[in-house]
Length: 125
Length: 328
Image 1: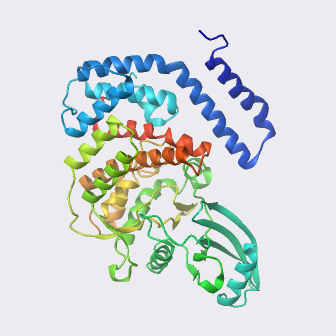
Image 2: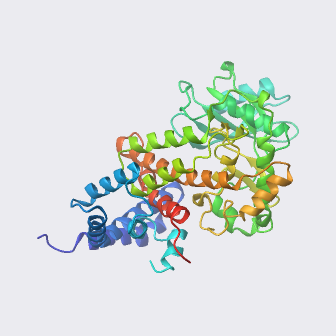
Image 3: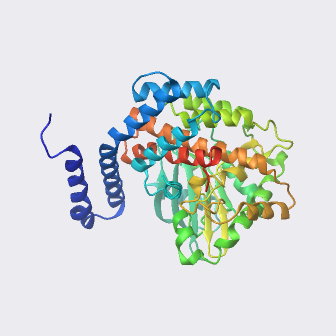
């Protein structure tokens, strides 16, 4: 077991430093790049916070859907192949719900301000 | 300095011009650059834009029409009364500027978010969807016998090309697989009519002023194909910049776009438009994957490119909203 602070706390401290202390000092193209850098650290913080639980839920859904076991990467590969072959489609029990849940978990990390995501969150997540 | 070459060039083809000032690079990758500059003239400065491939970068990427074709298309559009800059000069070897062209600079805004939010465009916004319909109708009516040589692409070929691009990324995405299946199941086949297709007609590639659309830019993906492709692409959610209830670039309704198109004497096929909107959403998603690959493999190891890779999920939620919508 590693010591603390956790990676989430450490990453967040760098993002906050850049946001609060460095942003006021920089302008022009470098300011744009700094904003991108802060966005990256915020994304990493969100992923570190959420990934363990969302991956576990995704694996549980994929096991039920596919009837096999594996890592989240392996199971996604199998699902992709089955959809490509036409063995699984939107009439398959649970597929639409699974894709929606997985996609919502991705947007929560990648782009929580994306308008389509905010609209769908309003429908109950 | 590029101003020396530009000055020598303009003196040859622009009557009474004495030189240029204020040359500044607006954008540029390794193979293509855009510069702004002013031509010094006794009647007053003339705003101009240079689009070029620097020397040693002749070959265009496979999907691109090439700068010579772009110049020809913009000039044709200008002559047909479509909002477009006038092409002033096509570069020749003597210019020593590489390959490309120089065009009139049109003032206005291209940044989509500003066009959608700023007060300056408030009066224009409600009319843009319909105006865009009219512009696309004009563009699809450009005489085929005057067009430069362009690649020809129908729906079936496009599905295969995108599938190949996606598979080459080795990036298994169940939602993309679902979209590919849907596209194959709904492939409308060859269109009854083949026309010029702009290929990247969207909010972000238009110069907008308080009076509406002033110019259509970025013709590099022009090709021959199904005219409904342009109507679908302009509606892709990624180009609504947050205004998700206004499908046409965040400006207005599909009905307005279609009405403008039909008022200009051309017919809309809404089913085909929907097909191309799904195709376009997937196309942008796969392009995000391509950005991720280029970030990983170099030479562009920039943070911006890395983050575009993380925008693929935006197209996944938009594909689900199109193909598996949830109850409201």
